[in-house]
Image 1 (cartoon, rainbow, N blue to C red):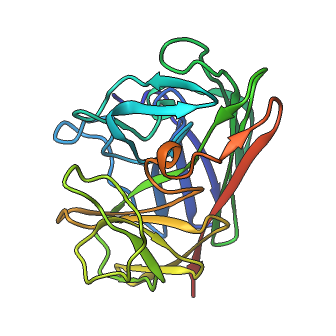
Image 2 (cartoon, rainbow, N blue to C red; image 1 turned 30 degrees about the horizontal axis):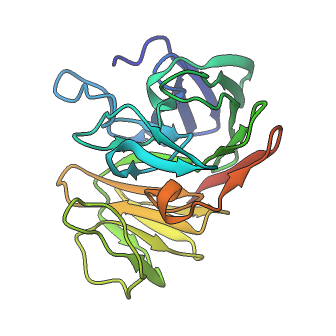
Length: 264
């Protein structure tokens, strides 16, 4: 998936390029000439592996794409081996609802078919201010109840250092899927989901960013040499099976925010 036409917002030395047609993702974040995200290029074209994209209507893997909801069994399309991963919004074009020099509002009507039988509408706002990038993501149910989890998947260029102190972790089984009960976090490298209520700090090329969110689940993937993914999300991977009580009534909204602040 190529980025397509880009929309830029900026404030001072901070610039953000957004690719509405490529999943409503952020294609690049640049602060004082330092680029922070892994971009799209000929060696890195996979839709799942560049920029920073919204994950919805689920975040992370759903085991074999299967779940049970309100007395019915559902099968989601598989897009990652034998599993369904990160929803489908990151592969769909989003509508631009509003655009100013410092913010963009985007929306995406969700399908009501075999790929996702529940419908709904997703919205996101991406805005910049002095040394700060704030992202807000929401998912509103349509005319029927639905399960949902949301989050962000930024591919940060490999940091020089990460400060991260989670309290607990979901262990992964032989299929690489999060399970219960929770355990104490082991030493990395990781491709795991953690409970975390503290800011995360990343350092690179003399800059330091504080990452905060109202999400208390954070996935960290740092097993690759070129990037580290630090992903706040509203629930764990496989949430439709691990947390099946997360049901949203018609017209209700699940929302979250994620903020990056460049520290002096």
